[in-house]
Length: 495
Image (cartoon, rainbow, N blue to C red):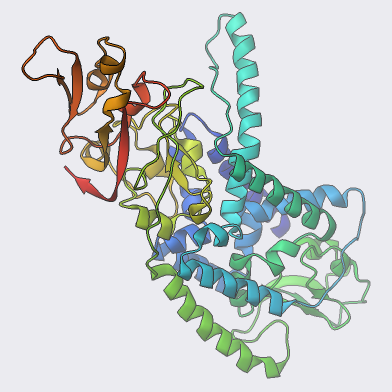
């Protein structure tokens, strides 16, 4: 019964979280966006103390249920392992915990986060890793399927489906997603939860807490006949059936062992508080030291201030092949992100905002200093003042929630005119495209020669009114570079 409940909850959570990354209509985020916000690392970076405390207390009470129900990467590995198990039964066996590797990876992860090397640290983050896989690999397949349905629906005079653009938002992110998928698939296919119990930093933290959980899976030595079925079906490789011990730090409470035991020797029940489920007494002092270390370093990691990094981003292009990308002296980050500094400090590069952006403005960065973190680029669209999708879906606090009214007053940058590229001067024709489409009226067309009212009109930018939405840059017909582009501000301003 417990296993059925766990499986049902895991399938529901996994399906809904996956759909959050696949949904291009933005409908599901309204109802199920909270599932992204209860992921451990995003909640920690967002300083969402309520969620973090809930997950910590929940783990202290019931063990690592988070890893087998809420974490999408964990459930994904379970699916792969389940398929593999159809071909080879009873393929697992107990193996001692590689504590040096687990705590070593966690230490490196924390050091990288504190040192500002987020682009490397987020490669290990479980929720973000699955997000990159879903948005880079699963989403295109989902969109192609939608377009196929739209094709047939159109021929039946139905508008139940509509076509969407399918394009590679970042080649580097897609390659990283492929490598991550292949590695996880091989590990899960052969050894079940190897990644979760040797590499995953979240799994290590929760595993440390679960050593002292009140409810755990335990073995009744009087009933056990050492048939080893429990150990051979434990994907966490944490059941030492010979000594009747279960390593609670690695157990993800999947309940498989309970179902396999034919003698009722394994049960999930209350365990005296403070008594580890496995391990020797002489390791207690080491564990206490570790607890103090992780408490201190977690606080440092959550509150550290990371250096703002210079960005070079795509942008400023109409959807025509021969347009080229301008260089920006400062990064362009979405309204609500406050600054490039805040983005670097909190972003886990999960790609949820990239997937949710209806204007195709956000895409993962290829810059190694901020690898896979979202950047703004205007060659396919511009940041519409009425859209606040990215701020609504961000689970890590990298993009803070803002209202539509607030967004129209947030200045993320300002437009800069490039005289040598402007069509009225280069081709001698009237344009004014940038001024006509500016949503804030920050651009006015004036005679290029003040004394001659009939001279070609050129744009003048009022930097106090410009909010940096990129409408002018996106719609500028100049080739190969736009005659007007947006440069970012280190700190966003309210105008």
